[in-house]
Length: 192
Image (cartoon, rainbow, N blue to C red; front, side):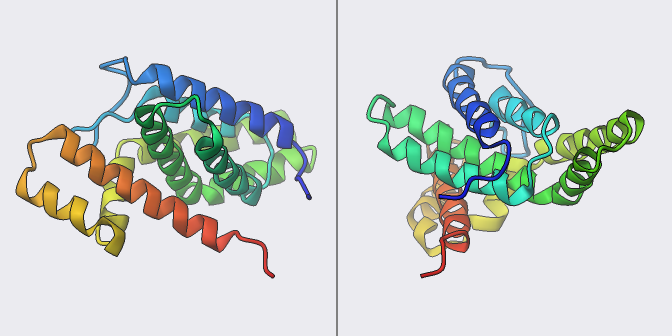
């Protein structure tokens, strides 16, 4: 199987993201909140910060997210709550990668071409700014983009009937995360 350069580093980063996702659940004020009031955990911030330190091609990041999700489902040590949170974190990270792909490409070009440190620092700052903007709206964007998915009909209906229940909102958010990850997995399946 072909693995782009830097694959080991990305796998390590994604493993660290998953580990932090498990512990971030206990941090009440771990991150920003979208309009929904659901916290964006620090694991998402950590994962996105890892993006800025590498010159990996964007398709490599997306493939690692797809692979990481597959590994989540094979890991029998994860509780259902941990798996849910990790899938949500992967979907939020994926959304940020997709929204900031132009900035990621510029950083990739700068780093890969042996660009000077000042130019690469400027690209890193631009990427960090893009990620910062995305973090504050990531949950709302995920809900907006995937809540109308047919697979989320029951979760959406439950949320429409009880908007104040955080467990109902989390089920809808998890459904949207699964829909997002399913879509990108289909898009990145090898052609037969």
